[in-house]
Image 1: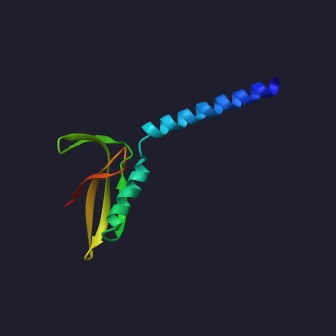
Image 2: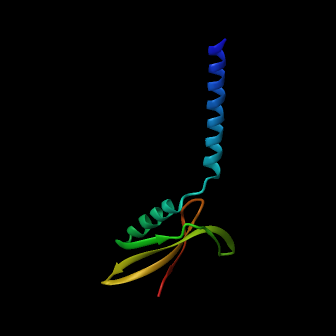
Length: 104
């Protein structure tokens, strides 16, 4: 009888772990580090970057009449010997770039 209870307990534990993982994957947002990595990869397609940063706390922004939860960050690029800074907003759910503004 002891091994049957152990098999049942293991099965229940596995099922509970599986369901919990599925729920976490569904509702988990992208980390700020992952969002920054995505943004840097996007910027690198157009040339090298020399620096980057990101705020860890998301904020709500409005773009084209829609509200997003976004991470704010920045990227510095060296273009023609001059550093140019860009501020970006990355979606907390997907990491996609919502907006980019060139800083002056």
